[in-house]
Image (tube, rainbow, N blue to C red; front, top):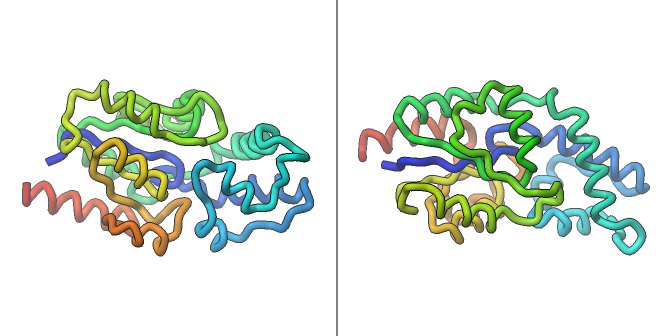
Amino acid sequence: MYKHIIWDWNGTLLNDVDLSLTAINIVLKRYNLPALERTRYLEIFTFPVIDYYFKLGFDFTQTPFSVVGTEFINEYTARMLQVDLHKGAEKFLKIVNDCGLTQSMLSAAKVPMLETLTNHHNLRHYFIRLVGLDNHYASSKLEVGRDWIRELPYKTNEILYIGDTEHDIDVARELGVDIVLLALGHTSYKRLVKSGKRVFMDFSELILWFDSRKISD
C-alpha cells in the first residue's frame, strides 16, 4: 500500500482547461494568431510550454517568450478564482487523508499561486508541502521533484504520483515512483493511454481503483 501521494495541480485537481484556453486565446488575438480550439489544445499542449507556444505560431525573435508567457499568466491569474475543482477531487483527497496517507503537491506553478488557490478551495490542510517552480514559465518540475523526493521519509515504491500530462509521466519515471493519470486535464486520453500507464476518465474511477488496492494490499 502506498504511504504518500504526490499530486499535480492544474488539470488534475483543478478544472482549469477552459480557463487556460480563454487566457491563451486572448493573447493569441493580441498577436493576430489563430484561436485555439479545445481538441487541438489537448493534442499539442506540452512541457516545456515554450514548445507549445511555438506550435501556436509565436515568433520569439519579435516578442520574447518571457513577455508572452507573462501576458498569459496575467490573463489566467485575473480569472483563476472563478475555476472549480474537478468533481470528486476533494472527496478523494479526504479518502486518502482518512486512510492515513500523507499528500503533497508538485506543480509547474509558483508556490504563492498554489497557496492562494488551495486556500481558496479549502484544501491546504490536505498537503504537507506545496512544491512549485520559482517562475511562471513552466519548464520542468523534475529538479524540484528530485529535491522533494529526497526529503520525504518514504521509499520510492511507497509513493504514488497522480497527474494529467505526459510531462507527469516523465517526471514520475525519473523520480522512480508509480503514476496513475486522469484524462480530465491538459492532455487527451489518446495521448495518455499510449504511455501504457493506468488512465482514469474521472475521480469516480480513481476512487474505485484506490478502494480495490486497499482490499488487495
